[in-house]
Amino acid sequence: MIMKIFDFNIHLPCRLESEVTQTISNESTMSAENLAYCFTRHEESFALLSNANFMLFNQQLFDGVITPFTDLLHQRFPAPLLTALVDFRRSDSIAYIERAVAQGVRSLKVHSYHQQIDESDYGAIARICNYAENHNLILCIDTSYGTTKMYAHDNLKLAAFIADTVKNTPIVLLHSGGIRIFEAMLLADSQSNIFLESSFSLSYLQGSSLEADMAFAYKKIGTDRVLYGSDFPYIPAEQSLKEHLDFFERHRFSDSQIEQILYTNAAAICAL
Image 1 (cartoon, rainbow, N blue to C red):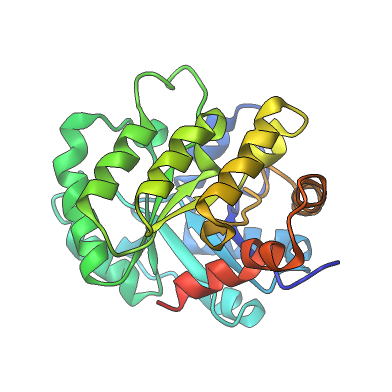
Image 2 (cartoon, helix red, strand yellow):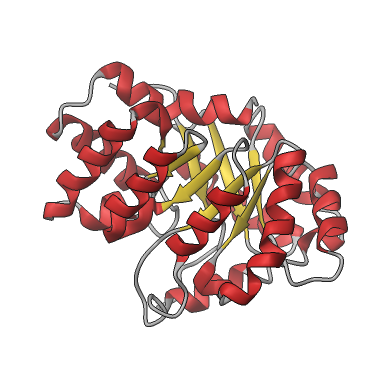
């Protein structure tokens, strides 16, 4: 059974390096022309998708125009979502976001490990979050858990701070907190504007006891607040979809719950 699919987490490096940090570093310098080229290279992988959210890691990308990429993207998807990683430390961060929004960005992202965020940054991040809430933008927070930086940069502590700062705009916890799935669940259970997104973690943890915890968490907060993501190309598109469908079957998700996770929830928050 294949329904409409909205993949909430797609990256566009043309190749994966042996070190993930190097791939992310490469993403961080991709121009609009690079993105267009890599989108074309990967386009076959998106054949089953009805829509998608593209993660843009170059924090200077919107100092220029990105029409070489967006023109191509709109030929494939009617209303693609663009998520911009925001350099909240820039003195002109709000002006930068305004340029990004003018070019189609509807979602802003912070990434604790990559941006080396600590509590001294929270004030600048709050300014970004308040702007997002006042302008109906989605907020995405990387809540993966791992690497040697997992203790230095606490992404769920950051997520809790952001949840205290904004109460209305959607807050998406990318990767569902990884092995901290219950902490992510508790955050989402406390506030109705918080969503859990399944990318990478569901594939990485399949077969472990934490897989059952993910199923419990998704049902506990309600499947109307769970979003499907692949984290492509870190997880290949077909592999991700198969693993999700197998997960739904093993843990007895209904057809309507699956439809919510795979498509309708993401479509709904994009329409806000």
